[in-house]
Every structure is written in structure tokens, then in C-alpha cells.
Image 1 (cartoon, rainbow, N blue to C red):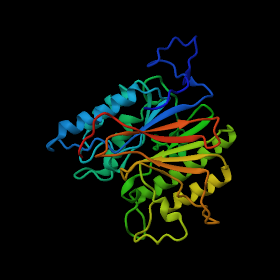
Image 2 (cartoon, rainbow, N blue to C red):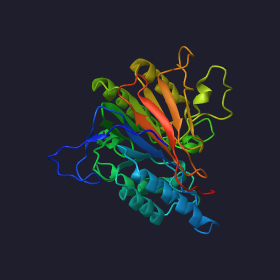
Image 3 (tube, rainbow, N blue to C red):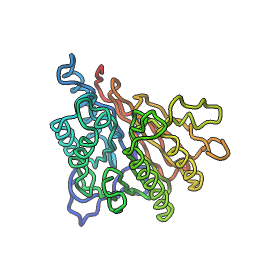
Image 4 (tube, one colour):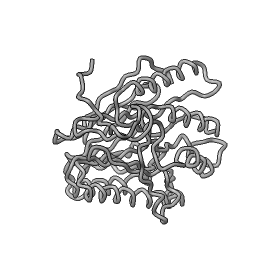
Length: 328
């Protein structure tokens, strides 16, 4: 049983909004919580046990809906093998029905790994379905700043940033399968363009956090970026890494920022909380950076991130278990 929490939200009396819909309320300067899920459901149309898996997925959504959270983040992989418009629309309806604001960042299963589909066409369709507005999906209309406001990165609407309770949050479009870099010496053109956008958005996010005097910053993305390989004793990867430049820049920015930094991702379906990132110059572990990975299929559960502005560590993570689990 989780301990009783302090009240989460202060709602403007003049707003006239219900707790579930309407104007975005501002969290009080006391602990508030964020729910994170990803890598689910993995259930193909003709797969045995499909209904059991979908029921377990719905239980995760229902469990999150009942929680008192400031917002929800889905870190990608909304499907396993199906990349159709109808599947996208179904997930969009599920996200829209969430009583909390929900921010979704794309995974590789949605576009890079879609057999029988043009990956770039699927990526554009994802943007059309999920990133058309200037607010989060779900309830309460949480406003988002999108990287697409910068003409140099006009297509990257999925890279978003927002602030709650004096903390900066942002998403990066970084995906599994080596970030769609490819295994050759020369990376794919799509990767080069998106990498430039991600690096610029990461720098902008830390710049905004410093400008706003944020207590900390949290970064959400789909891919497990292989942070263990930043350690000095780590073996060199057997293929060119689609994550190395990004993790080096994250380490540099986190060191300069000095305050608490959280990196939250999915991809490898393994709940963990650790501090594996090292300073790219000194090789020392960056103790102000905490990595958390949420559950994924077949463990259909979610992650709770508590943001406690009274704690020097700021971010705390724990499982949010749904009452049922699927098998795939």
C-alpha cells in the first residue's frame, strides 16, 4: 500500500473547470506525480491471447486514470507489428479519453520497423494524428511548446516542452533499433536530420531550464540509449552508435546545469532506476542524473515519478502495478 500523499493540485476558482476537463491547473509547490507507460500493447490481430493482452492494457490505462497525477507520458511503441491508420486512430482515442494530460513521443515500432510500409510516410501520419494541436492529449488542456515553432525544425512537432511546478519537462524523438541510424559508416539521411533537431531541442531545454531557474529537468524518449557504454571501461559497440553523440551532449549539459536531471525511457521493457551516465570529460559518474526505465510487454504496468521540490534529489520513482498482466 502506498503512503497517503499530500494534496496535488491547486485549481483556480475562477477557471470553472472540473478536475478532469477544462483549464490546466497549476500544481502546488508540494510533491506531485507523473505516470509513465510505454511498449504496450503487443497484440497482433490474429495473435492467440489477444483479448487477454488488450484487457491487461486497458487495466493499465484505467489504473493511471484513477491516480492523482499532474500528467501522463507515453514513451512510445504503441504497437508491435501493426502500423495502420486505424490502429493510430484507436490509440489516439484512448489517449484523448485519459482524464489527465497525456504527452506521447514516438517509438520505433510505430514507423521505423513497420514491415510493408514506407517508414517516412508512417512518420508523417503519426505527426498528423498525434501532434496537430498546441496542447497535450487527454484532459485539462496542458499547453506545450513544440520545436516546430522554430522554422529550422518545422516538421518536428513531436519534440515538446512544458513546465509544471517549477520543473522543466521535454520529449525527444529518439527511438530503438539504433535510432534508425543504420549499421553503415554513413548514417541515414533521416537520422542526420532528426539527430540535429534532437540535439538542438535538448540544448534549448537546458537553456530554458536555466533561464526559468527550474529546480530540475526531465527528458522523456523511447529508446534505451545504452548509457552503460558511457562508462570508461565499457567495450566499444560492434556497430556505429545512434546514441553516442546524444548521450555525450546530455552528460555535458547535465554537468553544466548542476541540478537534478531525470532521463526516462522505455524500449527494453525492464523497470530500473539507476545512475549510469558519466561525465564525458572526466569519466566520473554524474550523480545529479537519474535514469528510469518503465515496464513494457509482457509486464503491463506503469511507472510513477514523484517530483518533490522539497528534496535535493527532486525525482523519485516507483512501480505503478495494474491488477492484470498480459503475456506478450
